[in-house]
View 1 (tube, helix red, strand yellow):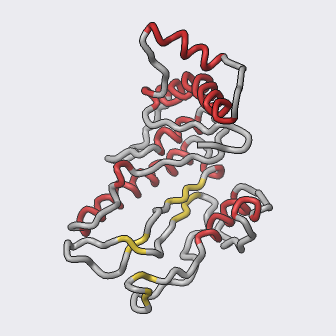
View 2 (cartoon, helix red, strand yellow):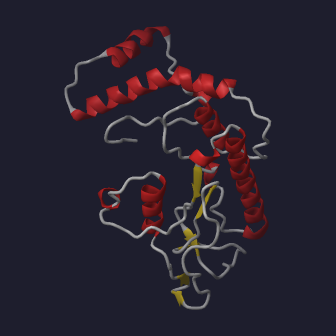
View 3 (cartoon, one colour):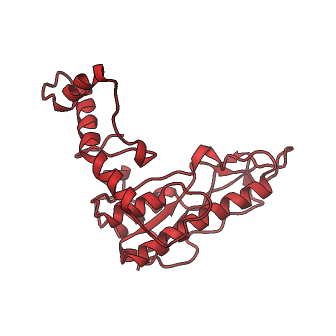
Length: 234
């Protein structure tokens, strides 16, 4: 992952976010981290990643190991408990990204019961995170955007599942969110080759987060052009 002015951290398990090596390899790894000689942009990128990980790994592991909360994060943890620990530890990160493991929502067969169970796991975990943020006094500083990279078709397939489609839902949750439904409800009968026709450009949602939440006025610099925000935040 790359950013313009810093090197983002990417990790799964905090306990495994460390560099280990055989004795013969340790000196080479230390040389990578301490090297200041850069021959090309690719080498610079690798050195920046190595240095970022080296500097962050002990603090990150410590923050996650020391965090204690009475909040039950549900049966399936997919990362928001770790985000809570880093927020409580004062990490300066403004955007955290977590994903439900193993592409679990890609349900094409016998979807009904599985989908209901997955939605329960997801909503329990998100609700716990928001409750935890309220507990530590950070609820006004946090919002959650939950989305999928694919939508669903309207009709059920022959395997009692639903195949990939176009339009989809997206949720924004948080203490400062004006609750409600935004955008026009899509039709279940006026379809495009079996797909719902989207009614809200997803870039309007990103524009809303960029301008209303992160207070960055130049939306076009991020999205290529300006988009009208939805007025989600109070």
